[in-house]
Length: 182
Image (cartoon, rainbow, N blue to C red; front, side, top):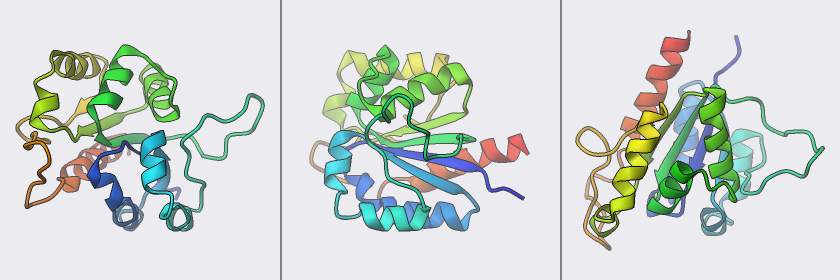
């Protein structure tokens, strides 16, 4: 039996530092994980990249491959974009695909790859009118956006919740998709 392939994509928000533990958990739950990072998140996790590659057996990607190069990842069964910054969400909703992660998920909409995203934005970013428009656009495109009650709720700038980032919600939503596919 093949394991479902989970693309785990992260933006440069503090919970991205938890990726090694998230990958371990996803592996334990039976996923084959491929890790993709925005350029800043890749810089933040440069020291952890070898660990992530060892845990996944695949290279961590933050850049597009060259034309004609074979893809080093299997096709995704499901994509999780978490943490997703306001920048990533806005670029994705607007179709601005100059970064690998945003390009894959934007194309994933058209390929109908089930996708879950959970933002990580503070209350100051949450007040910008584009964020709500981007969330609405992504939801209308079929993306499961875990934002607001029952998902990620913004915290004050510079603060983290004592309970931490709700990874259990994100991985739970991925599990529901995979169960429905079986």
